[in-house]
Structure formats: structure tokens, C-alpha cells
Amino acid sequence: MKKIFALLLSVTLITGSVFVLASCGGKKKAAIVGDWKDTYFTYTFNEDGTGQYDIAGNAMKFTYTTEGEKLIITYEGVEKPEEKIYSIDGDKLIIKATYGSDLVYTRVK
Picture 1: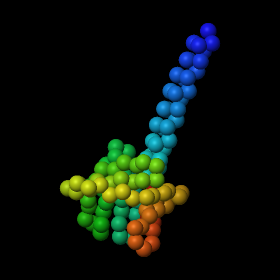
Picture 2: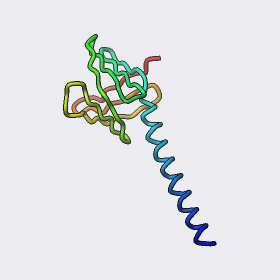
Picture 3: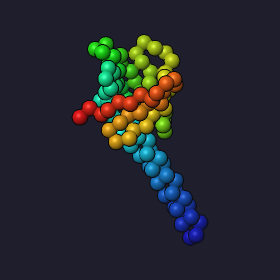
Picture 4: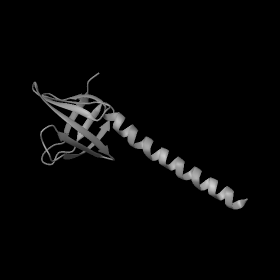
């Protein structure tokens, strides 16, 4: 009886852990969904992992994923994905700059 209880408890804990980890990733990705703008540029992140980067009227389509604090974007027609470190603080999307100041975009409502 103790072995069956231990087995059931183990299965329950493992299943619960998988759901918790899956939901954490989903929340992070869901947080970035929407339109983000600065003076000249707009990012659009769709729920399905696609998006668009608009540079003063010239749009570039992309696909994206998030892994923790990494935002991985693959632009249409470009083989190598770009990895960016990002965070969201309220209505601000902050992309860590490789050089210079961080890029800050505001959520479009």
C-alpha cells in the first residue's frame, strides 16, 4: 500500500511540475504579445509566434520565441536568428543593447 501511495504521489508531483513549468513560459510569452513603439520603430508580437518590425513604414516580418529573458527573433529571409535580452516593466519593453543605451518601447493601447 505504501509503494502504491508513493508511486501516485510521485506521478502527481511530476505532472504538476510539468504544468507549472509550461504555464510559466506561456505567461512570459503572453506578456510580450501586442504592439510596442518608440519614436521611429514598432514591434508587433502576435500570439502565434509571428510578428512584424516596422521601421518608418518599412515592415519586416519575423517569427519569435522566448526562453526566460531571451527573445529570439528570426527575420523573414534571414537564416540566423537574433537573440536579445529583454524585460517587461509595466507598459515598457526593454531590449538590452549590445552597444549604447537599452532600447525602450512603450505598449500601444
